[in-house]
Length: 79
Image (cartoon, rainbow, N blue to C red; front, side, top):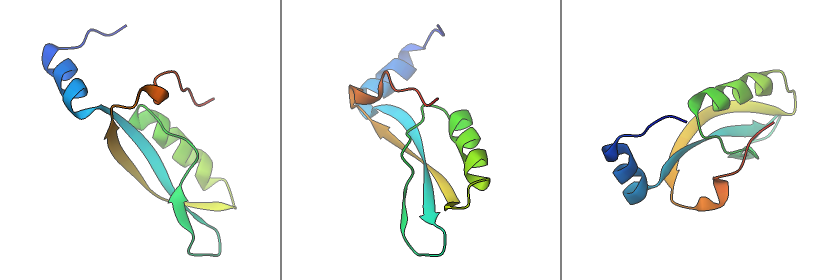
């Protein structure tokens, strides 16, 4: 487990943990939305982006980041 600095711990407590999600559009329409997965790192979101590029049902638009203090995400792992 990585050690966190006091400043990082304080920022996470005040502003929440940073998460990433990919925005997608249904192929052939203007129906934009967030994909079904929320990621804890940019690397995970990037791997999902690469998988989306092989998918013909959805087109990748962009990766967004957001902060949340919600603890429901803490044990989530995309497989």
